[in-house]
Image 1 (cartoon, rainbow, N blue to C red):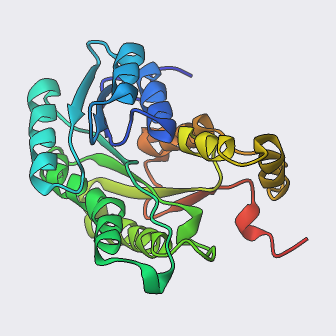
Image 2: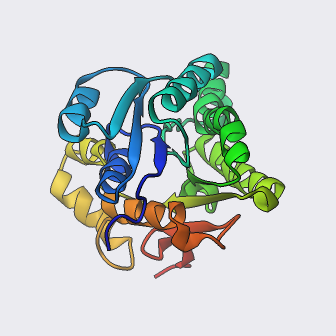
Length: 257
């Protein structure tokens, strides 16, 4: 199937690496125009522009934790493409600390990016979506929003809140044509996960250990998350609202082995 997003305009935050880049690539292949975003113009952004840059893309540097920068991004997107139909809130950051050792700065930055950042983007684009009476918002949450892994505080707190934000906004605006859903990935082979594995004393052994924890005995791919985002963003999912889809190979349902 092609052109599942024909003539639609999507903002995909954090789209120069990993899941975000896979989403942007797939959306473009399905006929969308895509606003690529990163909080900085670095080598990853340059590589994304080289691979994905075309008349159908617009790259905008904006830290989603900065409300004014997000407002400027939305304004530029509307001026360039004339409309916004889809938001994929993918940008995020890991903050894993001991609760009693968590600094105020770590706490604030975690929530500023992983929760408030998504709200900043939604709040900025929502008037345009409401004016046209249609729109799909997909928030990239996490299995950390469902299950707790020791040593990962306060990241799961923010991801639990992001699931609440998703459901609340979905119900608030459902009758006005806006759908809000989320995806909760488990272990996915992103650039950051690859770098983490490569930094282990025995990368191959650690990768095998991680894969063995998952029922399919393999680590997921960014493309598998992207296809779910594509479905939720498309009109095929027009009666799906306030839902969260876990993409973790069933790991979160496993009690023990």
